[in-house]
Length: 376
Image (cartoon, rainbow, N blue to C red; front, side, top):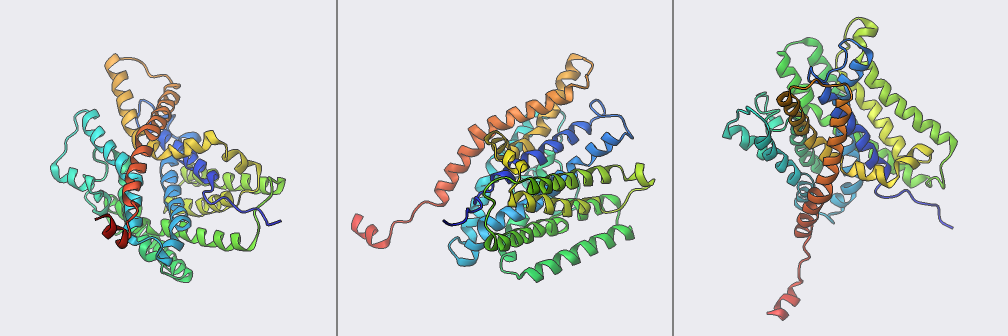
């Protein structure tokens, strides 16, 4: 009897997307003084860096998923670079552009120009250092602009050897650290280069591709686990603890050391790589739980959660301001729950149908030439 194989779609990683998106929601809720936790507390430090850690996780996971889905096909030529890129656009653009125009309609006192609108519509806003473009219309959407750069770069990355990719990441992180420690750039420009810009985050995406190659090598050498084991459960809990611990450590460096360590986002990358690799292997009760269909569905809706939560937070803030109500601590949970509910609706009734329609158009079968002549 053949050894059991690892599922191609790795549903446990889909569930992890939701567990990474939800802290981003709480981070943005906490960013407003009326919702914020006690300043200087350990939990506040943790929540403060949930946003950056979640974005980093998504960048690394994106490299892993694209590698698993498209690397072999692009190398073999079974999928053209054009078709691959159009399929990625079909995945993200409908909900992305809907969220942008929803922002124009729903946000109060929004000042914007047609130049800003153009740059956001074509998804170039994070490619330039001008900060008036980065958070316009729907502030979490900047990361999708960075993702588009990754999608284009991936076409070249798949042709590179693993040693070349490792060297690229080493040089990128070294240059980033040198840039931040030197303090030669103004803060807003430094933030763009190291956190927002595609070039500054390309190494995160590349690390995900490297994790995929490592996993693929292991997948070809060892069979999948026949069922959950206690040993792998301990490893999975350790990977989760490492991820959560990295957020707590970065968020509370000032409390622990009295100063802030530089390059906080890069400190999340190793933890993200470990969590994705261990999660992909599976074999424990944690990944068995993550394969539950409810968590997988929430993971599928996580893209919608990421894109719409900022708009929901603003609208709920307006509601309480208009009514003049005091905001209880439980209101944070209410906002987060509403964001999750609306994201599930958006995924089920807009994002997924739009993706399926566009995908069918992109992959529309071509009629062979002889049959065309016969039909004529």
